[in-house]
Length: 538
Ligand SMILES: [Zn+2]
Image (cartoon, rainbow, N blue to C red; front, side, top):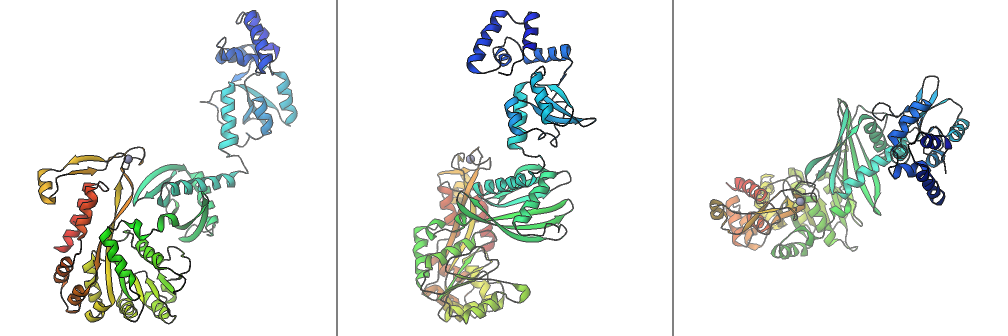
């Protein structure tokens, strides 16, 4: 019991409390161990404001005003934490002559003041504030916001860790840390869209980037040149790899963290959204032990994920798998992965040339983007190797014409190519808030469809975006005898496409329509990719 008699006697003598009420509270206090003053306040017999006024008038103590007084983090640790917690006192600032300003709820407690003075080697000045306020400040400055000296590093580790964990949890692919003149903006890229997370003070920004650069093995003294690095964190028992890149801007270094979450990256072919028919076509392509299988689509359409899933499906210890990538997105067990390094002369073509001398069975070339690589890849595919690669085009048939444009002879291409997969990634509608609507008359006519469609709205589950995850939509061209003959006969784009459609090619637009009808994607989004595709055919 910390009560001193002074204030209680004052309250009694001035008639502010009745003797019976006081005796009742004293009895209660002896049972529960709570202070009599606290019990009086809790029961509304007296308010803290009334008490504070008495302390001020009768004893001349100052009242702590949260709006006027500031907390000086440099002094909050001048008393041992255990002492602060057990006595509800809080050092909050320093006055002239090295005088420590201490907040107390009962400043007439002379015994406590003596203890504080003994613990410190400096003068103190007492300010009065309610116990609740003192306890909140103790919680804030000792147990959450450890801004006091010495904890700077621990704190910045917390920010870095928290930021990355939240990013992984929300399925972000990138975290952007962007400095401005007086603040710093944090954004997450989720399913291809950047969302603002929060703002940080310049101080927190500085400690955050220092910590991240240390973890990523960057030079923390270098602020004027771009840097790259890699780091790992543990998240729910699994390792998450991150790649860091820093770029000097006029207000400081902008950092982008790319989250390479294997769990998000490795899919089985089953999980990639292929229809049953497309899956059986893929199985036919993958059965062969030689030939070329290509994946196409714009940047960010998930080509690499699809290529990896093919390698994963075939990966057995018997065979020799080699990849040439730029960059190596993920390390795969049992596969020799080579990183392209243009500076030292190791490009896709030269890498492929060397790989072919090492008796590979299955080869993955990140991208075919020049004549040399195209020629080498085709040759590898007709000399007993199974070769996977990607080409940056808009659809399956234009991939064929692109390779012909890269001077691959039609007769070679026709015998090398087993199949082409064209792919797009679209945002998946949030099933909790998607909004259904009927098609207009002209839409019905255009799509020969009379059912419901859905549009994005936004709710708390999808963080107001209207979307959750993504949907892959593909067109699969299986190169069978008829298609092969059309290619080797030197047919043009339209003719090859005509043959492919006759051979059962399910057009991309039809796959999009199926996803619209099942409510997986928004009508507006589906319509946009169909239009994009149609532009190309025209
Ligand atoms: Zn939603």
